[in-house]
Amino acid sequence: MKYVLVTGGVVSGLGKGVTASSIGVVLKACGLRVTSIKIDPYLNTDAGTMSPFEHGEVFVLDDGGEVDLDLGNYERFLDLRLTRDNNITTGKIYQSVLEKERRGDYLGKTVQVVPHVTDAIKNWIESVSAIPVDGKEGPADVCVIELGGTVGDIESMPFIEALRQLFFTVGQNNFCLIHVSLIPVLGVVGEQKTKPTQHSVRELRALGLTPHFLACRSAQPLLESTRQKLSQFCHVPVGNILNIHDVPNIWHIPLLLRNQNAHDAVLRHLDLLSVASPPNLHEWTNRAEIFDNLSNSVSHKPLVCTLNSFPSEIINMNFWLLLQVRIAMVGKYVGMADSYLSVVKALLHACIACSLKPEIDWIAATDLEDDSAISAPETHEIAWRTLRNASCILVPGGFGDRGVKGMILAAKYARENRVPYLGICLGMQISVIEVARNVLGLERANSTEFDDQTPNPVVIFMPEGSKTHMGSTMRLGSRRTLFQTSDCLTAKLYHSSEYVDERHRHRYEVNPDMVSILEESGLKFVGKDETGKRMEIVELADHPFYVGVQFHPEFKSRPGRPSPPFLGFILAAIGQLGPYLQNPQNGSL
Image (cartoon, rainbow, N blue to C red; front, side, top):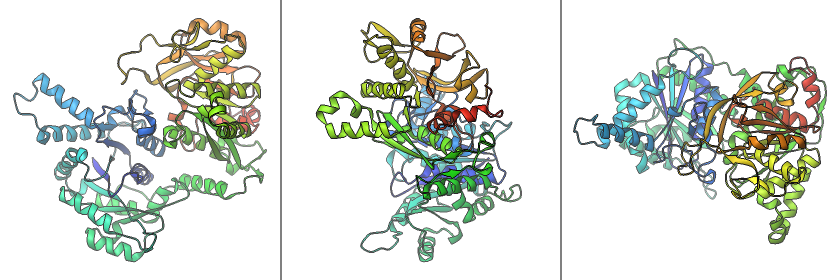
């Protein structure tokens, strides 16, 4: 196994995850099989109990692992199916070591960070890197490891030491270290400063690891003098100093690395040149160019779709499209875009497939509520004006009752005004509550999550859930949804499949005892689990697109292969869902 370790210095948030993913993309484009591991030095066992405001979204894997959002980047960039063990945390490592100690596996030894914790880290990396995650047999050729945090953090010290030992064990030609660092420019001086990177590399070397490559983040391309200075004082060859400067979209990063021949340098270091081929990044190039062209176009100018502007399943439609589509995102955590990162990416994938630029209008659900009209009338007015100007409305997942009233108002507006609506997880439950209240006249209909005394519990706590423990107690991971009829929008979007496997993360569900009453309103529960008792997909009859899904389709959306519910949502927003479904290649009518 060959290892590529990506570390970060100077400051956090430099984009180590995107850098690691992009390195994987370039290596995969050279014909190599790639797997990924993310190391998070925090004490949490996993990301499941973290606030989205604190750490961004919680990404969910097929096996139910609740992991860091960077694993979402790995899956999207590399088209992998990772496991919960591909995310290593300090909590997992210490839990493993302490369980061994309690069993007596250490035979009376004094259990210490070195060697017991470091050995556990090395063993974890070596075992997980051998697990195939690309649908093929046997281990991958290269494992890309991202070490979270910043070099010098106390919490990451055991991992640095374990990785130093791993480097010594596997040897120079099997281990490549890429250090991501910042090259700032001070406003007054206007000079690219290398001193922060010099100090970061010195810190790394003091801990026993010497970088083979520097990936330098900067606003503008590095000057040659800056590269020479970095090479001289960081002991890295000039040819191994990679510049990842600001680009219009992150799909340019693999292209940026290829253009600097990063693949050749990494392959040469890992002694893989003989088994690799020249990188084939045609799809990435086309994707990046399409997005750039849309971003640079005038938003009101129409464009004729050609065969080349659509993937194969959306061809021969010959209709006019606006260059952008306005999407109202009504949620709880809109103050931090990373809270809904996979939803944003899924919208982007769907829009690019339709040659559209997504314009997401973030609306805090609380700003739509009646209380906001009194406490902050201007904010309230702006929120409603933004909602009314949107071509479609999306209510994503969330927990707790804050903002629920606003989400219900948004769902009501979408239903009454025939605006395309997509509700994900909580968003599906919101649509059910809204219809129960405003169509069926059950004024106090609610979820027991928000009102445990409601006389009309249309959404209830799942029987198998835990009310005493938070972590890993939800219905998690890939679950099968069976379509109850082929004559529904969602089944057609999924190409008339009998079932679909999507990822879940929820504690509450639509009350099966209320389904017959709810369906009197026009709601149709067209997707159910294998028992037939758990509602998975709801659609509203006689509406252009009013769909709620209990699962999270955004987690399996990929560039060039958009999630079907998101694609249908965007097509409905531009009035082209009907022509799409009438195409023989896209399901059946």
